Length: 336
Image 1 (cartoon, rainbow, N blue to C red):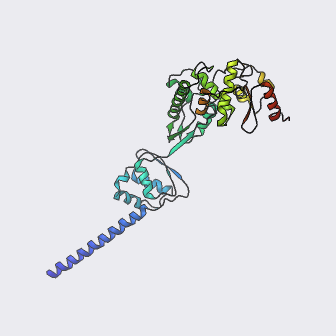
Image 2 (spheres, rainbow, N blue to C red):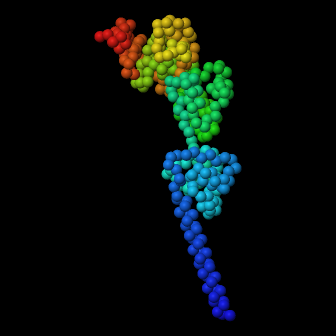
């Protein structure tokens, strides 16, 4: 009897030992598996739909070639059940990630983010094209006008009223949310520039400051010239001179502009042709940057009334028509 008990005990101990060894081997296998790099050679998007189960996730990853088999992933999630609570959204997987990295991201909801840069100096029409090209962004019809209405502006004139900046969003976000931020930022920056403006500017409202800032934005990309160009326009407005700025003509031409302005274009009567009208055009002609708003708010105190391009992004400034004509001969007509 004692012999049977000894044999049984020995057998049970052996089985327990084997079970422990197998369990440890299985556990170690799963732990090692968790550090396995994803089967990717380049970044790849992963969409987790609402209600996706662990089994569905495993099959989805296997079908995409991200993992080779599903059973190890399922067992890993049994060992780490907190990682099984995957969250809905669009994720980006990368070759540098391991299995456990991906699961941590899915459990934490670290969805992929996108950026949209609304560039200064561009028009609403150009920004509309940017929106259409942005990935995973929902764009309601007439979205700029819709934002204006929601923000209490029923003018129907969106040009210049949205702040150029980089905005971030997640997949399937509503563009209206981003543009609402942009509109509010422009309103804040414009209000600040108007409040801090130099005394005596020939501008009747913040909107007129916005219009002039948009012209300054289009006239130069050189930061150090903005205040000078703003100073020229302020001087011309004070003297009752026409602004005579090409970007307003181009804006008024719309789709007809093909890269050159003709003499006929300069004499055409349009609301934006500042060679024909006095004062400012009726609306901004582009989205001004914060720097252009500040330049108009505090323009340089200069005697200049004219400027002409050197064709390298900079300008020659002149106080008299004679000086200006000489600069035009040198830099535009190539006369010495």
